[in-house]
Figure 1 (cartoon, rainbow, N blue to C red):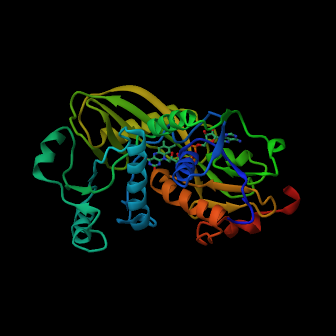
Figure 2 (cartoon, protein in one colour):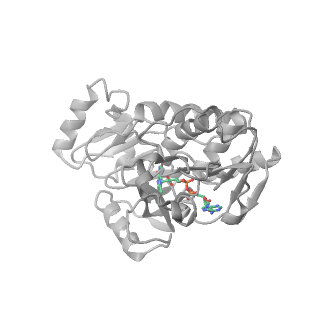
Figure 3 (spheres, rainbow, N blue to C red):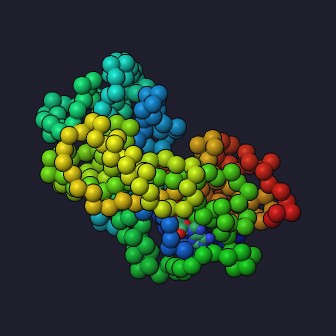
Length: 351
Ligand SMILES: Cc1cc2nc3c(=O)[nH]c(=O)nc-3n(C[C@H](O)[C@H](O)[C@H](O)COP(=O)(O)OP(=O)(O)OC[C@H]3O[C@@H](n4cnc5c(N)ncnc54)[C@H](O)[C@@H]3O)c2cc1C
């Protein structure tokens, strides 16, 4: 145990991907905890839940993918076993190449040992399902653990922990509630901007929107990607997204984003569709694209777990465990995720 948690109760503030991953890791360690959540504006509730170990733009591996992927696969499988439900789709992502160069680049990386566990060419049987998709330069397949049903993950986990007697309080955590005998882990997504202890951290708000569409003319049991994702969620229903906007600071839907998504979708597909739903959320992103973990410089019973950015599903399990190893066993945090890297932003008189 580190000096901060000698026998103290742990309070998780925020029930998004970050808070829920922390809860499971605590449960697997046999530790008790309580939760406070304001029940509003979850990024997690809007996310497609995709786990993509590849950055398509440069066709490189996503940051730390070789560590994060197996950890996420193991974590969600363990949760599925406990809850006795399916949370992960375990389906591939199919990349529609934009050019001959991209197709050639893919072919050369597919033969490279460092990428071969993630990249492959799709089998011929899969392509007829794509008669309403245009792919003149071909398609590549990304092998991944699929996508997480994020809403089911939050809700089924909450039901499970409520049944186990975990205390869930709803409402916005206020500074005056801080009890010196407890340990707090703030996992508030973009709500961190209002956190009196951690609002010095440079968290960017990356607004994003998605559409839920229905079509009878695409029967593709996986995810397509070409400047956007089109992910099957039910036999004739797909989630399509997402946009990126750094000016909007509230999770509101906009006509501009809707039109942008329609334009992108129709640039490579020919199927007729109906829009069922339009949603917006805010990704908690960090300038160096690494998560934010660690203890407050002065308030030693306050920890943060945030900055999951665009890849929360893949990042949350491993780094929830890593933060708890730090809090409970005193293990050092990896420097690149430790909030100490931003300590120069901290002004003691602010908190
Ligand atoms: C359009 C879109 C698509 C995305 N697609 C993907 C994807 O395909 N794959 C992927 O991995 N990631 C995706 N993401 C990113 C993913 O959603 C985030 O990385 C992740 O959900 C962040 O989780 P979080 O728990 O940090 O934040 P949140 O989900 O926002 O949860 C924070 C919680 O804290 C609560 N809270 C905040 N402040 C307080 C307070 N003071 N007191 C009490 N409670 C508080 C909030 O109410 C909320 O419940 C997407 C995001 C968006 C917007």
